[in-house]
Image 1 (cartoon, rainbow, N blue to C red):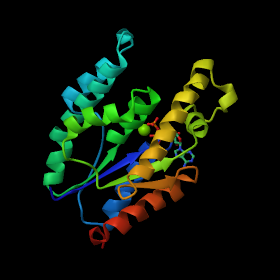
Image 2: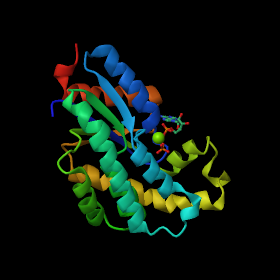
Image 3: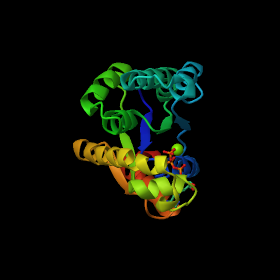
Length: 214
Ligand SMILES: Nc1ncnc2c1ncn2[C@@H]1O[C@H](COP(=O)(O)OP(=O)(O)OP(=O)(O)O)[C@@H](O)[C@H]1O
Ligand SMILES: [Mg+2]
């Protein structure tokens, strides 16, 4: 495949969705490469339907491993139907979350174990891995405060506060992945201003793929 596959990862509220949009814009302004901005389930009908099952409040009986398998299934369909065709066309694919999210959230957050999650995801994605993963690192508490519209942690309800332990496991798992895949995953300090984070991401892409830019 001749395109370039880049993913953006990090805990809730790290700024992934905010940053990725501006990043796509900035790349397009400075390169002739065609950029595809996507996120799982990416508007793919089958993946959206799977996601509806995962998120439906009716499905409180869902087992954690069932959830992990469904995420992997939705991921595969988005990959084969949207990401891989774009890569074959030589596009730069920027994807908001990918396999590292499952490793961190289902593997560590839900405590299924990263190895078990890796094995089902390897089945789902086969050989297609991102060449570069931008990991937006943020303290779990600050991330949660951001997505709760700036309310201080002490002002969050009990359930949100309990969620902190889960999100701390997620962040710790990302940091473990960073050590494990130092070539692929690059850390960005997401506690800085949005502009600073965007610039850092842009420079990492430029350093890794200098030929893309004018
Ligand atoms: N560097 C930053 N400094 C301050 N606020 C930020 C920063 N980046 C993002 N935010 C704000 O934090 C909130 C969450 O941002 P965003 O939705 O981009 O995060 P996310 O990583 O995509 O979260 P999720 O995992 O929940 O999808 C938004 O209100 C956004 O404006
Ligand atoms: Mg987001």
